[in-house]
Image 1 (cartoon, rainbow, N blue to C red):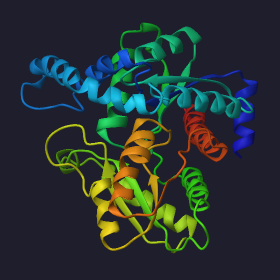
Image 2: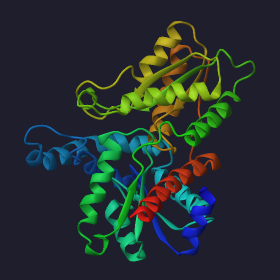
Image 3: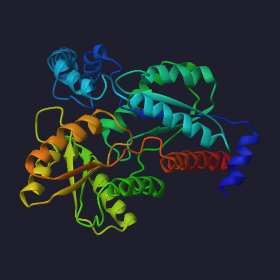
Image 4: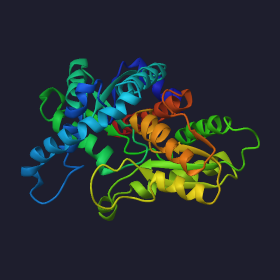
Length: 344
């Protein structure tokens, strides 16, 4: 069924733009402060009464104060974020996979650093694509990530009359997609294989990026989707290992989702757990949150607290299973558009 439909689309020469959305990261020490400024200028990250007036000044102040501290984190992982490199590798692999059946081009749109969404929109306009599938690389939906990226896309597209008639399909989340779950399960197995057998006593610590509780209280589905992903992955893997869910990467004052990753590790050490595998469940690529916050900062907390063997699950990155899952997500949306067009 899928093959027949997509082969027809390929013969018809349909030009499809696939846009991968990600957070972005500084590509040099000098880029850290402007990256932070862009981050804290986002109304989906910093919002309060009269924020529209105060946000630019506040963002500039916070970015300036935090820049040196954050630069030190990037220095520990090579001086720059690898997120652009991984996302572009994912884009290239996805394009190769899609071109077996579709005339597709894959573009990268970063929210806070280059290639920025505006740059991606320019490239899509220049390519002359007639339709697009928007694919944020955040498995679980939150207005602070997927929502922010899609709103920025709409703001930028509105500046290009040539894209006024661009037909668009959106993948809003894929937290429960079978291909994504299979890719995560594969990587957990890789992580467990780092422990001497038997590994049944290894505690799986699922760590997701935190969000403010106020966001969840307003109806954001992120927490529920993260919890669902953890349950589905455990079911898929069939492991009997004890497991825990926690959160990391708090970036602003106020109450955030808990427990934190470091508090979880201290608690486990306190009940004499000795072997831990951290699973970065809301991240699909290695970047500062996995390479520094987990593999350096959390590792130090774990070892100091008494955990003897600490491992981190390899990120999905350009895993062939993950790339096939992304291709399936795109093809499902392309079929929806094809069916709707045929019905019309």
